[in-house]
Image 1 (cartoon, rainbow, N blue to C red):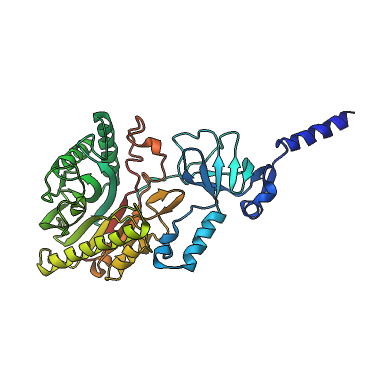
Image 2: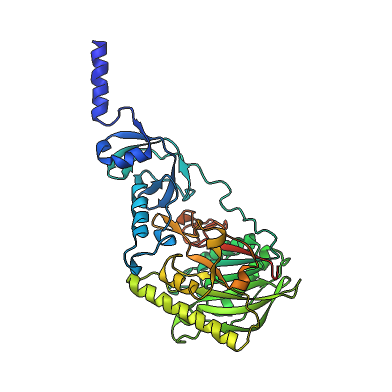
Length: 430
């Protein structure tokens, strides 16, 4: 009688989905999703978070990379390699629905022996919050070799001192948190020159940031900013901050020629710098191409036009000998990945992919579960020989959005933007 009761109980548990989970590798599950629908499984393959959404997590055995980082996309016609990468990302991912998982969750965190119910193809349901292991030393500064100068490219995500505009902070409290988080992030990076994207046009906003950076370092590093000749205004721009005890600007800052009525007029620039210790010089260009909005083919074409404007600006200041130096480093938020048409267009003009050389499988941005470089660096041939290393620093992209200045009271340097900064080491005339 007792044995019969146990058998009936086990049968009931099996029917209600509470039987002992089936232990299975992720690859085996991925091939036979339909076979396990409605069952409890324990996935023996370690899984990592590739994407964080409001109602679910995207999990995969390894980080999912944007296909356009490695292969030409659909805008260039059919690409066998591109389609292979898209299919591979789909085959190696699953969506997990679970209870609220907390603001400390990060893209890249891992979980072992995940037990969940298979509710459909590539969908899982966990009744309790899994225990994720955080990445170690996620925000560690990279080794830049024997560099004598450290250059930083950073998108600071709509930093506007004029409140209540189309972007940025809406209240004084938000702006105070935003300023502190950005200043903490930039001073932690300990660069000699910062090429910034998404900062408000004019001296007012950059002055606020420089003052905060100097306050945090107790004026020991003497940060200053380059006057690009902009008047204040509610328009997105690029800018430069530098350590006045390490470098000094030279020549006249250059801007790409655009319709002054367009905010793109303020997003492409170049400035010369002299290293004080050696007297050597180079040219730094900060740029921010059009974002991916509207039809992909249209925005792709506009970004190619943006590249043309940058190349025309470079030819103009070279012809006029504004900067008598072939060493040119182009930084920015290019809003496209390595194999997209605007980047390939720039490389066809003789510039070299710095991150593609030093850290080809890295990332600076996470979007809808895939990672890749939107923030990149390109160098003239003579400049490339003087670069010692280049790597992203993961202060932002992997961290949960609730750490942002608009979401709460967090005052750490994490998630000061949605983009990770990039650090580049140079040793002029090695």
